[in-house]
Amino acid sequence: MAVRGGGPAGPVVVALACAAQFMVVLDISVVNVALPSIRQALGFGPADPQWVVNGYALAFAGFLLLGGRLADLYGLRRVFAAGLALFSAASLVGGLAATPGVLVAARAAQGLGAAVLAPATLTLLTTTFPEGPGRTRALAAWTSVGLAGGTAGNLIGGALTEWLSWRWILLVNVPLGAVALPLAMAFLSAGGGRAREGRRLDVAGAVTVTSGLVLLTFGVTQVRGRGWDDPVTLCALGGAVLALAAFVLVETRPAAAPLMPLRLLRPRSIWAGNLVLLLAGACLNPMWFFLTFYMQDGLGYGGLRTGLGFLPHTVVTIAVGLRLTPWLMERVDARVLIGGGALVAAAGFAWQSRAVPEGGYVPGVLGPAVLISAGAGLLNGPVAVAVTRGVAPGDAGAASGLMNTAKQVGGALGLAVLSTAAAAGAAGTAGTAGAAGAAGADGLAGSFDHGRAFLAMAAVMAAVAALAATLPPAANERMGTPA
Image (cartoon, rainbow, N blue to C red; front, side, top):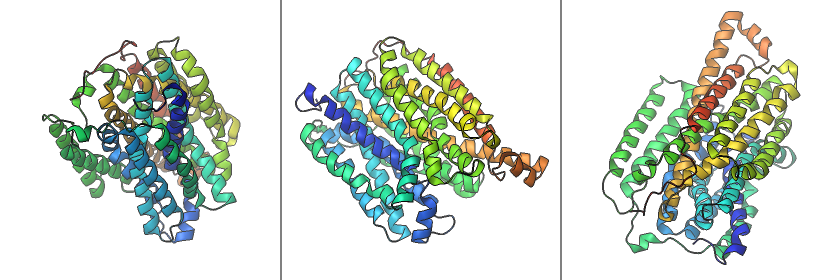
């Protein structure tokens, strides 16, 4: 049991989980709009500001599986509080940084704190609420707030940078953490602590999977600047394959508490649900990157106006995810909601692929935003329920870490593949019509073929809809007691 005081503490637990998840997701995107100001203030080299983003992404994606398992072994309250404290402290250091090195190191520490905190937020909900309507509503709130954090990051980052300073995109986490930390200590029970009962951390599994995920994330972040055939990219991706293969071998050995019990992957709801999350993440996460370029380069928007341009995505996601989806989940099969949501999002991406700057904001961004965000709001809640269904309490953290890893790796791979395809499409257009003609045709200086990227996202979301049909019905699939 994760909660002190039973039912009355339930709303506090949901608020804590949602607030922490919002902070984690927000900090993935909040720095994007502020990068020019950061570069000027701290004296970054022309290509170096990307490490303000990559430092966070590498640590976050790399340590998610380990972070998820820690809650199973050392107690949810202890791990949640440790992740929140590290995240808040790193935000303070980053907000006060005077040199590029300090800022990048602080962002990496933030990512590490987030990797511990994000799985703990989901574990907190699945161990507090039994399967049923209460858990459905809690997970719907959690997924909606997470999606909203991604969309709101651009708006909040633009507003804070323009009205205060880029430093406040990090410092704003400090008071939030200061409020959340004592609440966590007051309302969460110690729980867990199985390491004290003889279940030790799977060190070999932790080393191999963390190395593999860090190398994989690093490799795909290099694709945009170096290409797929660059030696640095190839070495990183090759090392990732070897490390992850070693992880699978390690996990097949008998262990008191394997980092990722392979039996978790046996039920169709787990492996198919996480594949849905990976593919959906490959579209929904890179979408912000391409839309930011579209609005700034194509429509000529500044940072704050670009952030405001994402406001409809936030509003629709919250409205659908918090209100409509929980109601539908009590009445409609999850497979229908996931498949239907994926098709609605696919229609939005297809519409977005036909947008041209001459058409303006309403038909070019607002219209597609309604469909994309409604589709995302419909499918994410049911998927979260599916991938946590039937998981034993002692494996809740591992399942949470797997779910978060699927989304983050999907986003990283999606951005690498889509940006490569979009850049190749732009180069092809420029080669046919001339660079000046290409720039004049779409207003984007020929840097990306946005239509090609969004059309690919539509195709992937259509595949997600087909994959949804392979999910089992709502009947529970039990994993059995943890090893």
